[in-house]
Structures are given as C-alpha cells and as structure tokens.
Length: 189
Image: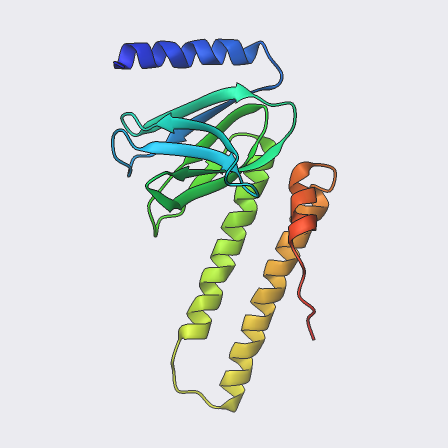
C-alpha cells in the first residue's frame, strides 16, 4: 500500500466516522516500532477476545470501527506484549502512542481516555518518587528514617486518593465503574 492510498483510506474512514455517532477511530503512533509490525487490539479482561489488528506503516497505525458500548481494551505489539497501552474503546478519535520500555505508552483523544491518562501520569510520577525513596541508601539516624517512612506513607495515601478521586469524578461512566470494580483501597493505620 502506498502513502497515497493510505491517506485516502484514512480520509474515507474519517468521513464515514463523522456520520455515525457509534464510530471510533484509533490513530496510532509507533515511531519506535518496526515497519510491518502488527498491533493487536484486545479486551483488557479477556485478552483472547481480539477486537482488531493494524500494521505499522511509517511509524503509524490506524483502526476504525463501531461500538455501541464503551470497552476497556489494550493495544499491544504482537511480538512484544509488554509494549502496550490500556484504553477505553469508545466513539470518537483515540490517539495511542505505543513506545518501547522504558518510555511509557500514552493515550488521549476522548474524555475518558484523557482522564485515564491523567490518572496514569499522576500514579507514575508518585510511584517514581516512592521507588526513589525506598531504594535510596543513605546513612541516617532514627529520626531521618522515620521521616522517610512518613514521606513514603504520605505518597502512598496520595496515590490512593488520586485513584479514588478519579473514580468519584467518573462514577457515572465506565472509567469510574472500572476503578470501583478493580481497585481496593488499602487500609491505612
């Protein structure tokens, strides 16, 4: 497929999607992946349930379709499943950037996917701080050790509050329901 037919196909997909309220379009970016790589789209909780596939062409991939319900899905590189991104498959234009580790993959485009990415960014930032604190080996007295433990506890509480706040803000949609069903808040002392 040459670039002209690829662009024509994408334009036709956008035209078709603009006429239907249940249409989704995934615009994928895979700059680190190889030409011809296969991207699989599956249900997050049922990975054997294949929704679609796409082939990486010049660092991009595209998937279009329709859905009458919002589904929690995962896009992954078929030859390396750890190169993936979880997202909400819903009507609209969804951008997925698949990256090789250690660079995280990203999603955006629709309201729920923007909320999901915002939560992931916050948790990633606090998780990095937690790991840094937990793995830092420095001589310290009991007071410094207690201060470090309090900081770790505070970060853990902030992470939990961030997840719970996202669930509350999205209580009336599938993102909030997913968090409610899959997140068990720790019992802090």
